[in-house]
Image (cartoon, rainbow, N blue to C red; front, side, top):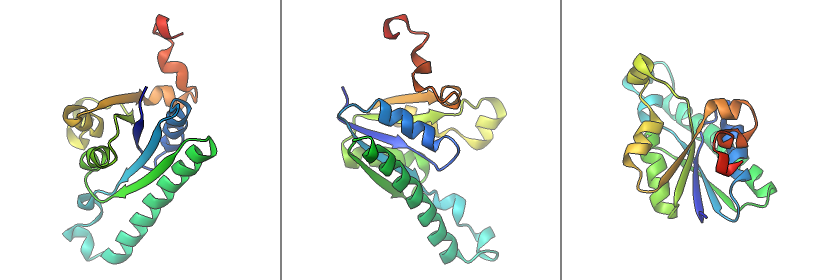
Length: 161
């Protein structure tokens, strides 16, 4: 169905579950895991006097690289072709640029389902991707991932049971 899949990961608690979900449904598709490092969040004038910016930058890249390397290892172990990308951009831009560079035809990502003031204050990467993507986007609700039962999102669709 899809030939190239971009999977957005952030190293949080759902990373291994969204990876397992995507791998399980990959079929013969090639996977590209992307972890964004938003320079605006890690490095600012406010933190410059407190942290060594070079050390902070190196540590952030190493952590992001470890995240995507683990995702790639999981996919490869399951027989799925995979590659990892650490992109130093705001998350929405990083995901969409990875789609363009890889020629992916779908994006898979978790959606935390934030609403109200939390969404206004924190923003929504999922919403930004949905508004700007030129390819299909599959949002996997976190409640489905928390169950560790990836097929749970299809239970309410009779034709897919």
